[in-house]
Length: 274
Image 1: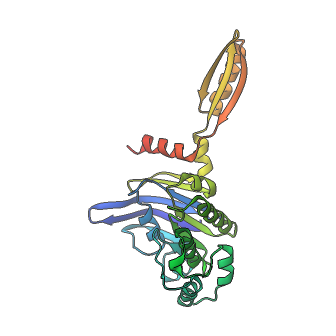
Image 2: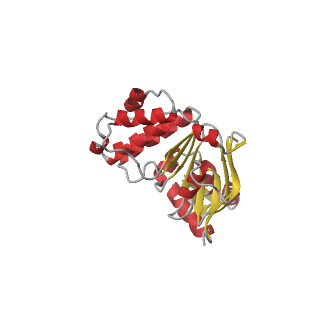
Image 3: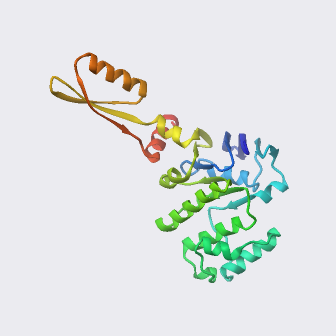
């Protein structure tokens, strides 16, 4: 694994914000952290970015412990933009390129993100978010850690940012992000970590999480009387179909119902989060 998080713990006094969480991410994968406010998502991301130190556990990048050199391979996006309104977009990005000590293709970034080179004070909230994202890309980092990248943005801007994140993953970047909008998590994430109260309720493939909650509705008939049943396991489905046939019934239709992530999430919170 390229990014490994093992038994991560963070305390603030007697309050344990992160309670022994673990997950891993490979190159080209997008991992979404989801959970209610106070679940520990932002704290986890800040630890991954090196902004705060954990009280227990470890974070390894490319098999090595976190160090000063690690920060050079990370692009971090905080939940709240911190921009200089009296600068133009290009001035702001050039300033940070100098700070990073890199020669960045700023014109290319402006074009890719459809950003006008105006004073930042004149930009919309969505455009300001894109400026912050452009800053994370100046030094071409291997790992991108984004806290609510599409939070509070209009659907069009949110979609463009989601598409950019998938594009970056295709370029073999590691992306870890938090979000409340399940639609965008479902659209771009390969893996998810569901958190509640600083703990992990689920960590793994998004497809597997959805698959575990897939159901099958079978419409069947006996002596012309139509009935239906809902089943949750494929083996259970096959056994039921065989039983209907053996008893002289007829299977009319089998419909596979794949749930949305939002429904799976709330069911998981209710089932494991009490």
